[in-house]
Length: 203
Image (cartoon, rainbow, N blue to C red; front, side):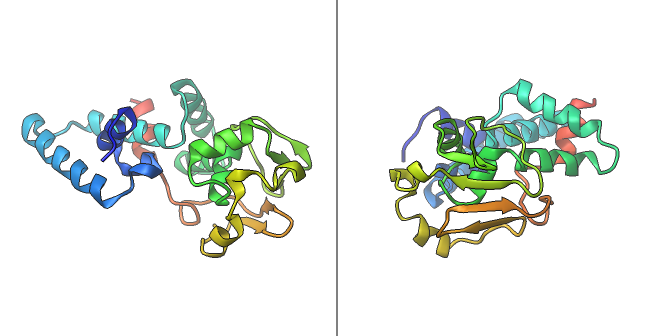
């Protein structure tokens, strides 16, 4: 099995942080490593658990610590919704995450590259900012010049077998769609325990 920095991080934070680590062989190796750590370290503190959740969520979305702190701050300033729900929404509504959720690419890292390389448009305008914050009603599309790009080869077949989140819409023929509603923890799985994440930052 391939090893390297990303696989070491995945063993520490969980396979979900990197899509390529989600294999049975990796799961067996990770469980073996976890048992060895439990024997050597004993019981993990509450602070340690919170920090692990924070790192897991941050790495899953591919954010720097500064970016993640900004999202946490905005979430804690929210008054109309629970901070954990607001944090989930902010992370999910990033353009790169939506591109990944639509299945245009297989990984969030690939989605960031796709956006940064100018293959995606929002409201008909090329947008190269992966962190671009989408809102309900925003139209997302693949640029005409990019529709035959190698990364999209076989997309129609992949899309036919994939389950599109209820908060997004997509038309395969026109290669465009939209955000139809706000993502919730039931319509978009969370990357970790967001309540613990917020507790870490408010200790």
